[in-house]
Length: 279
Image (cartoon, rainbow, N blue to C red; front, side, top):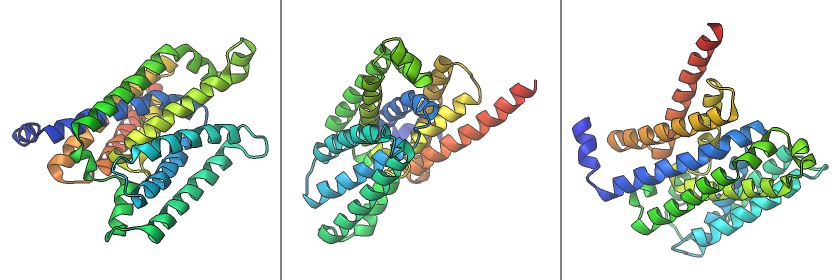
């Protein structure tokens, strides 16, 4: 098995896939803890469905670079979702459901009506559950992912204290002079960028797993925000790396394999956490 992995690692496209997968997993896990604690976990679901709708439009227009449409539309939707979620008449979970279902329905409708592909079912399935496109990345796409990932990590580190304050007690942070609305907006935009990056890796239906599972796993083991964040990042990177390598060797779908690794990691952390609390 080690010899097989060594053989595959000689190919540039495999190395590209590993680099992108690890970077996306790292970025997803950093803000996952914040979203779980703010009870806004499914924002990833809503935005991923918006990205699916945008990708449908890009496919119909035969755009070679889908990011041109997908990134701006997803970021704008994140801002609208945040504003709508703060409306007393439409709560956050209802707003996510509205945007999620609406975008998914319109995306599939557009692909059915205007599609030029002879394999519509395959296109939809690969978009929803991930595809082998992670193994056909160009050096330019890897560089773009690296730049955006570094930007996400830098933003998280620079504004760590503010994100921490907004996460645990938004009202108190407002009282102390923190502009919570701006930082909520920053979190929403960063999450939108992460969603777009993760589309080729796990597909739009599985993106939330990258955000939720590492955070929940880390919470089984640690109590402090910093420790949970660090543990979440480590677990996410390990699961992404293991999932990509297993999928390459075994020929399984990349996205599903990574999510399966996250589920296994959560089960292990849950059991370990239960044993620690007993003792």
